[in-house]
Length: 375
Image (cartoon, rainbow, N blue to C red; front, side):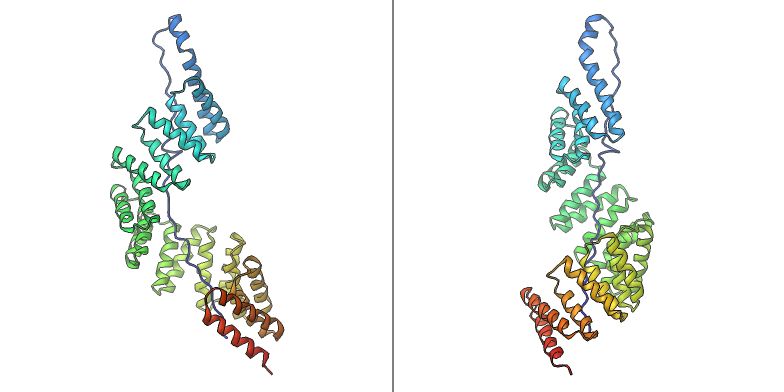
């Protein structure tokens, strides 16, 4: 009996460029006191205190004490409500500590005080996107590009937004602009490759992934994406080689182990497949597909007890996983557990019917009859 294999497409990586820390963080400029008469010193005292708090906040920010930094920036702002650097830096600290709405509010205030602050627009766009406001993010990125037509990260993120909106050609235009501005930006090639993939241009996608790994030979996302695309084109050996490279570069990506396991199982390497499924499960213990497919590999290796254990774990994670019941029934049948096999085939038939798969439901019911009438 041929067991059904459940496969899921790997999550193909999309990268959002963020320059909140490295590019957009503003340090205070030292105030130069030119007139030291007593009245001027008195007038400047509050501003000096605000500057001191900004410097203190910057120091805490660098040490990743975002709460402490926010407190100092807030004190500086209470002294000088129009202190744009403190407002901007508080926005960045809030952003990094997870308070996106607070960050958005501060970026907005920073823009009011300094309409040419391109970093505020860019970071606000990133925060809006994370908050689910893609239209607002798009508007801010448009403004970034108006202010600086050579801002590659803005094109990259705008391309990602167009990709999410399924405007693939607009996405490709933006990713191509990234590549024009920064020919060595591997993520530009990666994301354009993904866009071409979504247009069913598999060869075009592979060509861009080739360029991504040429620019960055250690880019594991590009190897993983190219592997999946090669697999769709029937190049299993090429896909296997790319997954080997992707895994060598990053041992924490469960999808790559899972997808390589599927290839190994298909090529008859059940031992290698079981090892890879186990790694995928170790990284992502709730991966029901990995348990199910490891069970199939165990069954192929004639280890029916281990297979049953894996199918049972699959069902514990997802009680509506029809194929896990079907597969467990087959394994139980192999161990002469007719009652268990019949019950599982019946459950599988019911779930298939509920899920609109009448053919599989009918197949499972036929197997119920066969098992019940075995001599």
